[in-house]
Length: 263
Picture 1 (cartoon, one colour):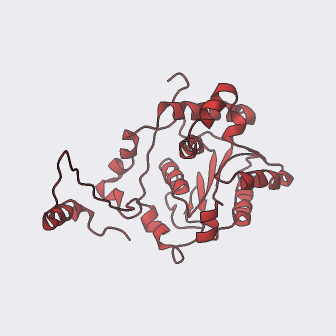
Picture 2: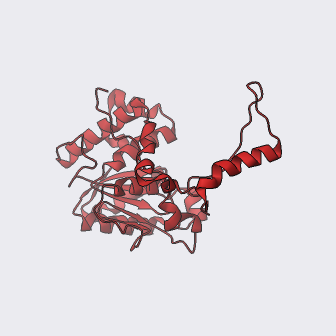
Picture 3: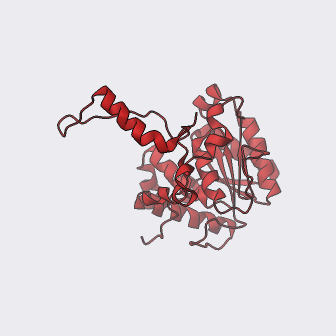
């Protein structure tokens, strides 16, 4: 549910603190848990320019950005496409795909592996992109996906395939969620992106890329998010209202693009 009057929230919060007579000191700090707010607070209420630039204040760690750049360089060598490091996305190079089939997703949302496979294959073929950069938290499903797309003459690579030596060791030394940041930055650079509508990871990528899309009616179908740069597939608002198009459009947007290798 969205906050109806976001401009009143600061004063409402102050009033609540006073009513509860809560105090905070250096020795005993007060922590207020707001629970999940990222699909509840309409960030565009602060203005389009602010909403689309605020996320760029905090940069990903330089080691993560450097690894992402090295993955991208290796990926583009595989595709035979020259790297444009200053581009918002790489043209005619690869499809970026987020396969969301971990156990929690299967249990809660029922957006199946087969449905994602079919959607992503159709998108790869329709965009004439035979190279797929895949990210998934389920290694066995990622391997299955790699094998299942071969009859369509599609090739799948992951960050693990594209790094070697010390770079790969550095990647493996990161936690799983830190490694996901590498994927996040590479997927931002996709020629075309395919993601899951029940994943905030996919929504963030799709909404960030939409800033640079020509097509404006991105929340009017045929997918939960559709434009010429990205397709976010999945279940619809009547089934999972927390992911409806209104709340999704309030998601924060910008993160840093890739660092130069010598950063």
